[in-house]
Image (cartoon, rainbow, N blue to C red; front, top):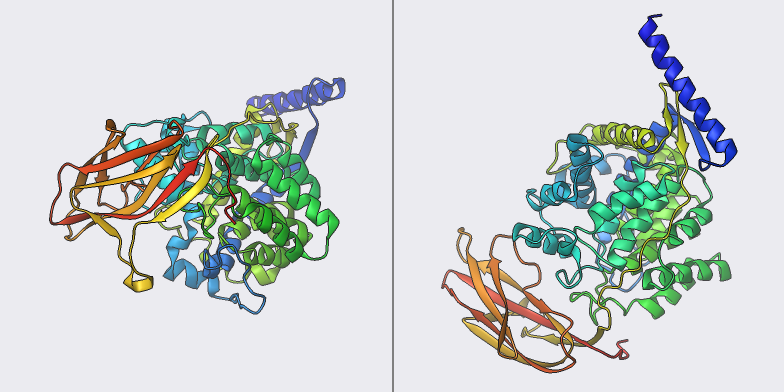
Length: 521
């Protein structure tokens, strides 16, 4: 044995002994020791299970809005199904390849990579985005940097599910270190979300982190929700799920009804306002928790319930499955659910050069780095993790003093006959309230991209000059919005300064916000 090697071993032993000594004296928090094989197996289990979950739920994604998926609605699962979905519909894994965009930045730049690197990584990526992600992409490409890019005044989708379905990596790279997962979530989650939307990602990331430390699902949920301020709606929703489960632990549908009746009508994002379409983070997080609690540790039952709860029915079982997969570890995921998995583990996810096998190793590497950074001990055979007691994050409230007031359709006709309202040059509307958002689309009649320039005036005052690209990757997801206005009547004018015959600005609907709540059920 070389002298250098003996010195390295001695150094690690010394650190380990110091760590144990400090722990016994109370200067360090509780520690967790895992073999490196156990740690790797749990990380593999998380990524594999997440992939299984999103694949299982995809056929009913947003096809059952504010209603449950019927028991007799069959969901396919068979040997070869995973390969079929990877090959034929690779874009269904958007919540995973978004994850992997951030994992790649950590790989390229290290644990201290700045928020700007993560923002630019997906803003300039070649994949499609929607809702908070797409608004944030537009904001970043037009000079608005994080966290302002995700703030509700600049992002009408701030409370949506986006970061919630992308936060898995943050918990996986911080096993047992919940506050480190929160730190990562703060840096990245505020790129595209705020308030309940950000809380959703924090909650999921912390559950992943805690899943390395215990197999007690109820404890994982209760510890994770303690991180979210009690006065937030997000916390209240999850508390309600927990209470309903305690009252009736046998029938998940009773709990679903309770949550639906109380919370399903509270989405304040423009697309979900006064609509059965629910992409709000807190209601979809409720379905994740519903699956975990009523699944009672059974893999198949967990993902089936999280799927049949409806709404974002592929992302919710992906989150539930990933957390359960962390607890299980890869080797303990039932063979039925892993059938066909080996066939796809070397296939790159769409828009990436990362396969599942690469993701396993990259997250494992980053976890080891995080453990060492936080004062833990890493050897070839085992890791000793400084388990962190989760701390409550600061309170954030999107749409403060804003309530659903009116959803005004600007289109005509129904179904395939439905036609959006085209703005040739300008459009004027009146409303009474404290805010509004205009939904619509910008389309080119040719293969060439075109960018409209538009002025937004409120009560005769120019408040914004915006560009409206026809390019789908760089589009402005919501065309116009303005919040925090003085409560009262307002006149809004949209003026297109460079109209063309080769493209259209089309209006779909108008979400209007008031200062006082009304019954929107």
